[in-house]
Amino acid sequence: MILKSNIELAVNVQKLYKSPQQEVINREWLSAFKPTGNHIEVISGVRRCGKSTLMKQLMQASGLKTAYFNFEDARIHGFELSDFTKLEEVLGNEVEAYFFDEIQNVPYWEVFVRQLHDQFAKVYITGSNAALLSKEMGTRLTGRHLRHELFPFSYGEFIRYKQAIPSVNTLYQYILYGGFPEFLETENPDVLQNFFKDIVLRDIAIRYSIRNTRLLMDLSLYLISNIGKEISYNNLRKTFMVGSANTISDYLTWLGEAYLLFYLPRFSWSAKSIATNPRKVYAVDTGLVTANTLSFTEDRGRLLENVVFMHLRRNHDSLFYFRNDRECDFVVFDNKRCSSLIQVCESLNQDTIGREVEGLMEAMDFFSMKEGYIITPGMKDEIGTQDRPIHVMPACEWLLPESITT
Image (cartoon, rainbow, N blue to C red):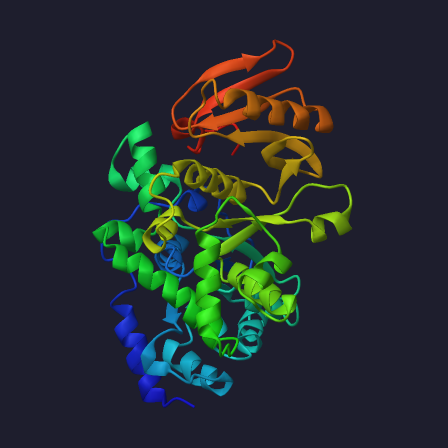
């Protein structure tokens, strides 16, 4: 239980930060966003990716009488369901749109949000845990909400933030630094190291009462050190000498729900095979990888592959990798049909072109596709045949919003 005076203090202090304090760029997400009726707008994404700033931009653009409250404020630690009545009194009667940050920290928050929705108020909420938001939304708020995801800066947002131009040089800067706005202000790697610890320890270990935090941290570091590689529960269980694969499964699930890691399944027409085959692991941000590992000093190829994965993840719901005799890095499905086949290659030369083309051609045969793509840092070319072209695309162009794959 929180005193009303403490809630009022928190509201007044947070008003000082209602508008972004520094000049910020408009996110690509905003250009496609249109509020829908009085649906609850749910914005989820990894910690510190810019959700709060985006929410403040939405407040400015709404044209409504708004109220904002951040539930991560230390002044209201221990906030519970009964305190929402006090919060509503402090915010006043004239509010038309409510903006709540990290509301999933409060048990049974969905009861209050449902009440506001029933009163025809517009509600926006953010959260850094996909599972918690989904659980509550699936009970009392089914059919009343629309979900959106926000990630760290894309390459296009990065170059606008840096006021730079697309080039191989800025691409490699993006691969090295990633897209967390707060880190880009200082370029101090301690920021990304603290982000990583906060996600693993605060968003996962504390929330799920994990005692063996050493195992969780070691596993997390191992996974981000092996982006682009296949993983399986049993192999990880043996590597970390864990008694049950279920423990590994739980940890991987929670790392995914916190938006730290993503798992790319191997394509199969069989749902059972998809569930049992090894998956590839990718990180939400390459800057987070380079700041927390020692294994990527020279391996820019896998970092580029991670950047391509995140670009596809932003724009498509269904992604796979393909492996038969050869391998194709990414199979993109839209409307339950294969729409794109993509290889990623850091250096396309006589030593690598055969492997990349053969893997792509095998996937093109399998999915009856007439064309494929090879993404490199800066090369642009057309190879293959006239009736089955392979487009070699520079990532510094392909990753921009105008790309044909967005």
